[in-house]
Every structure is written in C-alpha cells, then in structure tokens.
Image (cartoon, rainbow, N blue to C red):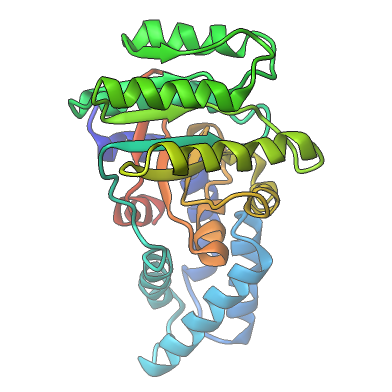
Length: 298
C-alpha cells in the first residue's frame, strides 16, 4: 500500500467527521459573522482546540476579506490554505546520523510498539539500529522490547528489571559506538508528571547521552495517543518541564476522529509531528507529511 493511501485510510474517521460538518456549513449561503462563529465551533468539535480554532478563523476572516470572498463555498479553499500554512510553521525534522532517539510519554500510549515500528522504519531505510531497554521500572517492559527486537531482527541492550536506567543507556551508547550504529532507540519508563523520581530519571538519561555520545544527533520524541484528543496537549506541557521535546510521534491515528489535535499541537507548541501510526502492522508507522495530511483532510 502506498504512503498516500495509508495516510488517507488512517485519517478516514477524522476526515469523515470534519468534512460532514464543513460541507453542511459551506454548501450554500453568504459569508457573514454567523458563518465564522459556526466554523469556530466546528473546528473546536474536531479537537483542534479553542485557542487554535479561534486563531485559524481570525486569520481566515482576514484573508477572505482581502480576497473579497462573499460565497460560503469559496471559503473551503482558503481554510485549507490557512491550515496548511499553520502546519508548516513547525520546523521539519530531517534525522541525521548517528542518531540517538529517546522515546518518552505516559503509560499506555504505545511507546514500546512505536519503538518496534521505528526500528523497522529505519531498517527499511538501510540503517543499522540498536534498541535500549531503558524502561527498567515496568514489569516485563524489557521482555516486550526484546520481542520487538526479535521481530525486527534488531540488536538490543538490556539489564535486569529494576536496574538503573542510566546504566542501561550508558551501555547502549557504548554498544552503538563500538558497532558504528546509525540509530539508537532508547525506551524509557512511562510516567506522569506526579512521578518526580521518574521525571528526574529523564534528566539523568539526557545528561548521560549528552556526555557520552557527543558526536551523535540527539532527538527526544514524545509519543501521544491520538484518541486522547486535547489531553495530549497537557502531556506535552508536563514533559516539557523536565526535558527538551524535539518532535511528536502520534499513535492510533487510524482509530479516532480526533486527528485534528495535530493542528492544535503544531500551532500551540511549534513542535513537528514526525511520525504517525497508521495501523497495527509493524510497517504501519510513517513520516508525517503536512501536504498529504491537509489534502486528505479536505
């Protein structure tokens, strides 16, 4: 299946919900204040968020005024342009090698599965990959990651359950340097901001990577579950207090009508969505493309 079709299938629920409401609003009539108010409500209902929805509609209103647009049906194209422009504001990430990618996020968002899919993605790009089982807190976390290592035929560095996560990361870096590994994927324990000890552990892991692998390109990706909608924003806030976040991996996009949260994330945080989960198979993780997303949404 081609990438464009995979993104389209993953966005089907979001697209159906979005288009049904937009079609009903813009199918007839003139452009007036009521239309803009109704459009704001629609965007909010599609999990784009109150603040972002208001800003989109204000920019849309200004642009329609400049172009002297009077018919409601002509607003759709300007709305599409406005959203594409907004999404393009976040700096795109072009991963350079050797790369250390640390995966963070709360429990249940699919971090371990994401790491397995990322391993397959990079192997498909002809890159060598090593997994680091840095989640020593959750029972069976390393064994689950080992299953993904076996499935993707990828090397893994792990210690026993309860070991110091920093020590595992240190050994992973040593292994990556010794083997000239292109990509080091670091798993971390799922945590909430209330778990101050685990949040402090993130800082420790970050320091070890900075100190021990100076010539590597370092990326912190937070994994967010698309089905949680606006709750994803509060998770970004919580983690940003403890570590730098470079990009987003959005999972379960295919299982929700809340894909509009991508727009809120990029507008409020200027953080790029780097990868999106488009299904349950190991191959179902793809680079996010703004133009494809907007084309499919409309």
